[in-house]
Image (cartoon, rainbow, N blue to C red):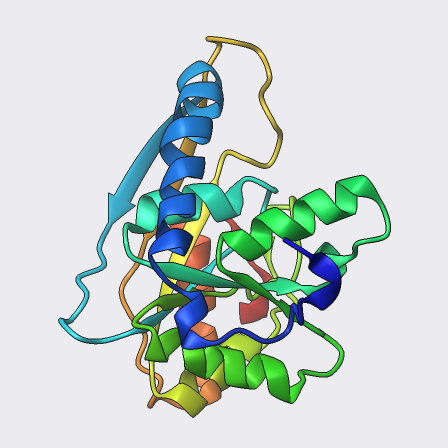
Length: 224
């Protein structure tokens, strides 16, 4: 893969294909489950989400670790693409190129959080055209303070412009990594009930914060 020729902000529907899903399965069942989940974590998944046939959704979890993307995919069980901050697609060093290449293969594309570009907006439409769902982290970055606050409303914009409902997800237990083999740490991943994109923006944000705070047992600072 020649990274210099890739526009990380733009993907077409054909880019979300069998190879994307195969690579996602590879990371889950060949890498994560045997080498991370099995020796280090007890992961409990609770799912209240009942998808309607033929509908696409935006999955919106809280964000507490670099492992979230992989375990979100495992817990959700549907085909997922991801919006990721543009800083993850730097290619100056070997480590940066490794990260950029692999998250791109997972189905991620870049977002400028200061100014959303037309390429990113078009890529979101291509995700749904490919019959994939889209994962966005409304917190905009990793937050370990067990508080729901300072939420970026971009996920609501994408839901409304593409007429797709939002599925909240609450994650807790990854706030601190556990690298003690077979002294497993409990992790909870809960998938909530869809929130209609037709609701007012303020109501969508309120409902998302309430559901995620409850599922993760976090403080909801947005209600103040």
